[in-house]
Image 1 (tube, helix red, strand yellow):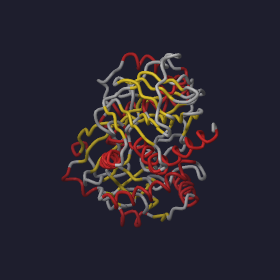
Image 2 (image 1 turned 135 degrees about the vertical axis):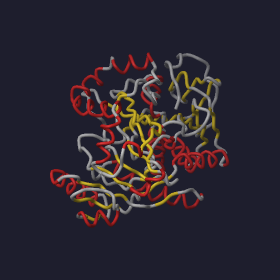
Image 3 (image 1 turned 90 degrees about the vertical axis):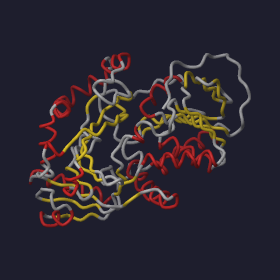
Image 4 (image 1 turned 180 degrees about the vertical axis):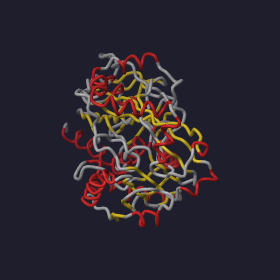
Amino acid sequence: MAATTSPRAAGSPRPSHEQGSVVVIGAGIIGLATARALRAAGRVVTVVDKESQVGRHQSGHNSGVLHAGLYYRPESAKARLCAEGRSELEAYCAERGLPAERCGKVVVATSTAEIPALLELRERGRRNGLEIDLLDRHGLADHEPHADGVAALFVAATGVVDFGAVCRSMRDEHVAGGGRLLLGCGVTGIEEQADQVCIDTTDGPLHADALVNCAGLQADLVARAAGLRPEVAIVPFRGEYLALAEARGHLVRHLIYPVPDARFPFLGVHLSRGIDGHVHVGPNAVLALGREGYSWGQIDGREMAAIVGDRRVWRLARRYWRTGAVELARSWSRPLMVRQIQRLVPDIQARDLAPAGSGVRAQAVAPDGTLLDDFELIETARCVHVLNAPSPGATASLALGRWIATRLGQRCREKG
């Protein structure tokens, strides 16, 4: 992702640029997948990121789940791109020798009150083309003997992968294919001109035919640096994980999820055995005190003031303050977190768990305080800005990158 300040000063010199060249801001999995699609279309691509390594933020801080597409509104961009992207990413991992496993998951109703939502979720998944088994207690025990519930769904198409390894593979592929990669290079200003885009960076100016903003947690700031005023704001939500002790790993065979709250694009506290065999529990979802606030101690005063002062955040808080209070309480109280986990796997005890790091999710919030649930792009004559690409963004990355590249190509053709 890239730090930005303000739009590039108008009237500055305009050196020539290579025809068909594109700068991609952000070396996470979506930025790298977009660069891959652009190169396949014959573009000359430079990827820029302020970090010293690829995949340093959302792409490298997640549960590693390769989503099947169970939750997403049928016919939405999320549903379509998740289905396409999952198959493509599985094939990519097989081709590149990267670890991936289609292990399946269970979504567990812990009470009869949750069964209607479970059945509605099954219908949504079927409309998205998935094969889904409805399980009773005995069927659940066959898949996850230590899980407890009155009913469950089994989704065989769900898997696990190392998204960090995918990023590193795409990095190597990009460089080997002639792409340029500028790491440790922050963006400080952008000017979209009639015939090119001028990007000021900490390593000097860049000039390209077009630009794609895949900056994740900084995406709205990058859009503003290009002179736009997006209606949505990126609000960082931190998800905190716990690790299950290796000696207790037998309590979780694969992936165990709760029935999600349909009002939110978050899936709730779940248990997942990663591609490395370790079981992680989480995440909760609390407002971070900075766009890269991976702990309560990581506070960016200026960013926190901007977040707290944003009317969209206050409207969000008014809508969902009860849910937010519960998430906050779980963050501060290990016993509350343990009780939430025990609803799914009763045999897990507090002594079985240890802190396991956090991730920060870039969530776009609309002016009325609602959470955007689908992928969101802002397009100009020469730029595409990805303003919302939450889960299943990593799963969908190859298909999403191709979609972004196609949208950019259409914009360029429209302007002749």
